[in-house]
Amino acid sequence: MDFRLTQDQIDLRDAVRDYLAGEHGPEVLRRLDVEGGRDAALWQGLIGMGLGGLLVAEAHGGLGLGLVEAALVAVELGRANVSEPIADTALVAAPLLPAAHQAAIAAGTLKVALAHPVNPWIADLAGADLVLAGGTTVAPPASPTPLDSVDPLRRLYAPLPAVADDDALLERAALITAAQLIGAAEQMLTLATDYAKTREQFGQPIGGFQAIKHHLATVAVKLEFARPLLWRAAWALEQGHARAALHVSHAKVAATDTAVLAAETAIQVHGAMGYTYEVDLHFWMKRGWALAGAWGDRAFHQHRLAAAVLDGDMTLDPDATFASDILLQAS
Image (tube, rainbow, N blue to C red; front, side, top):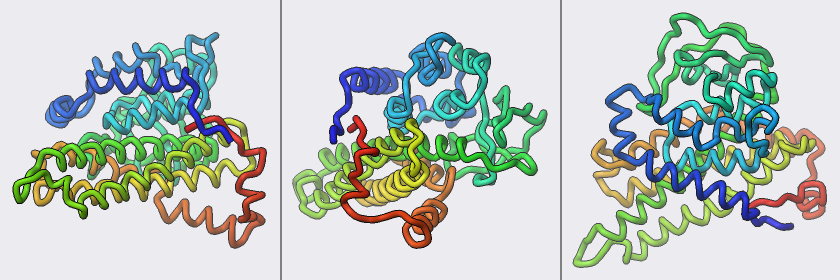
């Protein structure tokens, strides 16, 4: 198996990471929290980076890339705690829409909200031009009912009535959500590690104490095990693999567990300050909690995995796990 990223994938990831580090830092999150959570200039910046057309064919003004690249970008969106609906619109909805809509998404002139019965809410419904629901598109309601979220930068609204199930939407959205959870976990680990290097106790940085090191190392190991599951799920979904849905569920469970552990550990490392608004950590902590329940919570995806193993024909042995038809190139 070759789990390495290609140079083009690395360049894409690094370009998005560098851009967001310069344009979407904690000071921007605090401003958005005061101003309402959305900024047209930030949206245009993301479109200018080419993210709107990431999965759109070149013939329609896009980059024509695949789901592995989309997952890489979604990780960086999670790392930067981006709240603009670029993930839902460009990384989930675009490939499921007609060419004309894809071209509009690539140009940044169309925003799409996602409706599915697995979620008791719709994100960014008020600012959407279309709603993708049950395999078709509908117009958003004129006056959607806002809902509260644990995450102050998420904009949630009451769901539409009687939305039909849509497997393609669920799998893509769960995958991109898992990727954002991985990114949030990475950032929480970074914040905790940086704090441990500067916060002193008993005359030395707390990062020098073995207990702190072990907690941070546990999160780092959890991330190392979760990332390959994400890349495998992205590749399997792109290729139409027979068990792609199970790979997505596996990735979502692992990403959820990693983000929750990262949040708990980062809070502990920060001590009593970890819960407070004054510490930047709370933005990523709350995003992790919010996304953990989005597009199928842990119980939902564990049930799908358990059903395949206990009630289905899924074989658990090396020949099945490392079968040639799930080889992929990722990292």
